[in-house]
Image 1: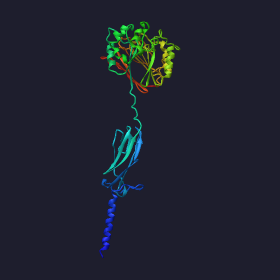
Image 2: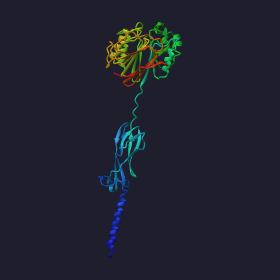
Image 3: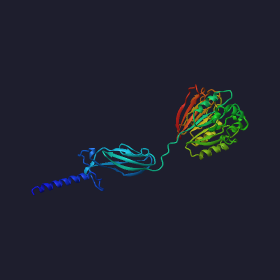
Image 4: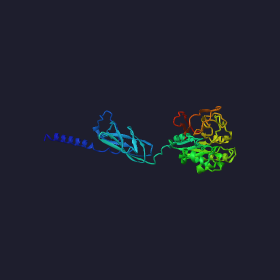
Length: 400
């Protein structure tokens, strides 16, 4: 009989030990409020459970959500044990070392927080469509005064064009001497004719040595526009492109003329933020062969009023780049139009005469083409010379 109290005490102790041991495998009771125990050792063997909040979340591609992990030990004491984060599907959702989740593409992913032998999870659903990649810049390759039978310069410039993808803009006087059907077939066709299916041409004065520029319009067909007009427009990526006919003795260019009225209406109708225009005769020109052409001033006035960025011309057999300027030739970096003369497609060069105000770069030795990279609100230019030539001109600009 005296031993019964001792036996009873041992039984109570055993029951307590079993109760504590059973607690180790229980989940955290709902509604239990626990506080950290800073002084407690945070050995991973002590981890009972890991809870992740929020337990589920829907986000869009590119959006983020911050997850929080709580580590519980025995008796549901909150531990400071470090957590390792991982994603079951990084192509759908990624997670940083601190639990920041980023949606990547539509789908489902399980985000895991691991501490010792235990892991908690959060179910992430990425909804909606993947944001489209930014549009690639458009390429416009330009030169005028190109092909003449008996000269190999147009073959050399054609070799430059062949290495560049993009739309080809001819700046007039494409086939010498008179733009006949035979000259287009035999002189232009074997070189630049290789790019006919990606060419948006403009007409020069030499084409009109054949009545109605019939050789030009016959060769390019619908791509050259209405044969009675020779002006048209098209869109190229984020840009609106206007092609005009500067042979004003054949198709009027004056203010109020059908062409000028069409130009203003076309510019008013476009939804594109950036505009480039090209035609044959340059308004501003330091070349000794032709000088400034004032007949195309109405084109400049309309384009300037519409906030156009770039004008490309040929006619003078040289390369010249102007700073942005007004139709009156006043430098204006904020709203001026930048003009390039690229009469370097293959014809023999003219010389430089009186250098005009705002002329920044001139070259009379290197045949080649101008490559324009037209982006969303931006443009870049690069003169690409033929093999053996080293002249270069590059730069960038922004739309107004």
